Image (cartoon, rainbow over all chains, first blue to last red; front, side):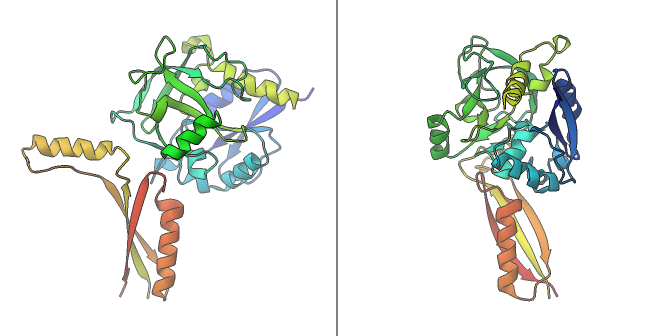
Length: 234
Length: 84
């Protein structure tokens, strides 16, 4: 069987692109393909990952300039056709700026850039990105961001809840969704959301940094594996 | 004659402005007891090479909505000035 190719977009200022490439390459049956921001060619990939970093220096607002790069016009069309798109950290910010996901990310509540381990739970385990995560499993996946404070107007939050689009929430070590466990002030402890169609996911924690023993956690692997298993079945 | 669009982008009142809060605390630490609050925004100048005011205004508003501000969490205001 030929390998399934996964696109990893490289913006100027991306800094988790190679970590993501490394994580994808650690699974059998899939192969990462780097996609340059200035290109229009998606090279036949079956899913796309927007990695973390500081695309275009985070000038103006995180993700706001990346959203208008040539490759993003193709990524938006690709998402509209129903192909899976995953945005991690800065990639999540780009997805929100593109309108592929609803809401916005503002500065962390306590003014700090946060680089630490967090506990999260996949509160919706029936997406193509989370099918291998039991809902009560507490995942140790790190965050590294200054602007991860998720905000959306009340009617959007209500609609996200109603359609089970909230996929990851920050929890304490026991898996409880509490204010103390909320690192950045995100509404309802939201760490990741999916679009209504279920093919575009954005999250602030970095699953590619919880991908091997030496990194202190393997809990990010379930997300990639869920996606790759889904792609094998398509 | 081109126009300069002077655009101010501010966080909506409902959004916590952590930078503004830090500045507010600093001002109070400096002893300015009558300072009630501080909020931080962005000021952007864009030169638009259009002859007609209406067209320059239309472009100014369009770019403010499309790129310069994020309507989910920010408001903007725009002032146009003709360049001599």
